[in-house]
Length: 360
Image 1 (cartoon, one colour):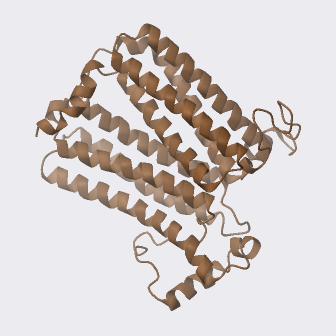
Image 2 (image 1 turned 120 degrees about the vertical axis):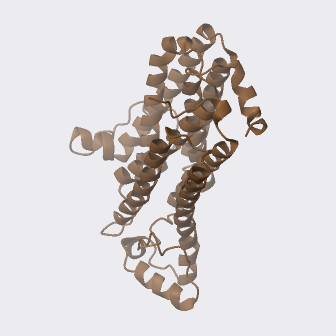
Image 3 (image 1 turned 135 degrees about the vertical axis):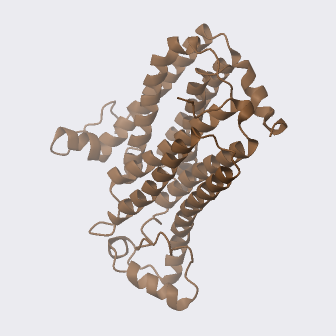
């Protein structure tokens, strides 16, 4: 069966540019989502109109209609009962941008796919993967509304489980696009070096994924606003209130103290795992591309750990929380690139990327 990743010299540069634009848009989307969550803007739009929701309110009557609907929500009644129409506008716009940006990603992806298909710039083997990406994007939109709906019933916040699922799927789509893109811009090479490091890399990827998911739990439960000290929590290495809730799994997944502690442990474990993987890569890998990718991943993880500690100590200011989420995407990007170097030649990678403009 033909590989979806055609030899790099046979891939038209327009395909590369299209996927780069899509990947960047997804990256920005995740950052906007973090900003929406941190500013409590996500519950300002109480209806989901995937096809007709492109236009914002056009006049005072439209604004009043939307505000009247918002006043029936738990967030208004329990959290912002003094909010005026003008205050409502300030949180509405961010959620509106978040939703419209998600639709724009779908439009850019779909129109780009149709254009490239008509111009015969996509290989037959690529199309099933691109179709899967489009379906995942549609599912992500529905999952976003499923998440928002959980905060419109009886409590002024969304389910942290649904929040984690929404973020997790966004990152899965981003990783899929990156892996596809990297496969098109780099030639296939000898992956013997990767065989010796692959198990360690898999452990690191699992740790990164779990850390991100528990980070979403922390965000959904506002767990970052308690025990704002590091490395101890409440003056103890293991918090005394870790098992405050009845049931073991209830504490692991839903107790804010336990969720924050778990996120800390996973983050520290990720730093250690990436450092050990970097050491092994430096010793065992001959190709500079592989060693460089490992170094990029280590720098990204160390930077993210520093941002996480600062975010905690400052009780999650909005700007720092957004930066922390953006850096998480940088870590994911570096991890995908590192994994990709196992399957592809090292020295030719940068030369190939720089030579994209030369063919077509």
